[in-house]
Image (cartoon, rainbow, N blue to C red; front, side, top):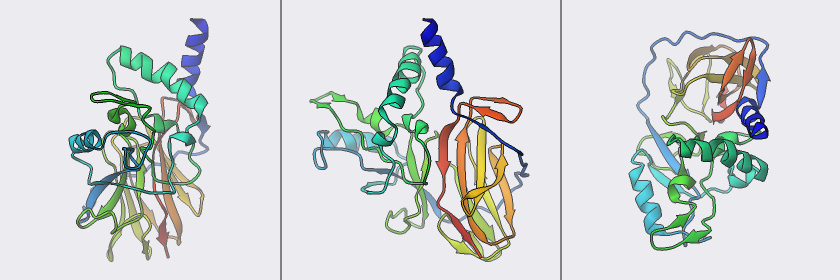
Length: 263
């Protein structure tokens, strides 16, 4: 029991990060873009793309999630294998099993994923057993809360390839705007412009990167940041469990964006 409690504590306190300086951005009102926020699921399994699975059950589960615009196939993704066996074991021991026993909803296991590049998140776990009314793992577990967001006129996945991976319960809003119009991850625009980002989880830590290095850090859920200088701006977002001074413990991946190209 003592070993389990130690493991439980470490699971929820690691990884951690020390932040040199925490910035503050005034979350002022902003214009709302006319493009739709669309969400898609990537690489869900069925008998058509193997291994196993049931196309009808998959379609029923996708229809329950009425916020989804489509499901699609993509090769360059972050999948279940990127989490690693050890993290899966820790997830089941300290997240899935205890929260299920307490009738709470476990977090998405993809929040444990190590972020090196901002790639789409796949729902590509293989189904081990598929019978008439039984799938192990179930499609609800395979899909979880993760989505890949994009901005488009008619929610056509071929209109925009800049996907924003996300593991939270409510879709974020991330875009830039200026007098020239609205701009979305992957777009190019002239400065000055304002980068607007809104998230809806508790205890959000936002890293704003310029040309691949940390530019500013925000311990808040909404930012309005004026971009004056040229560069490639991207956003990496985490939730955290506990803060002590400038130490943030229990980081979990929430979202990231392809770069905005400011000139």
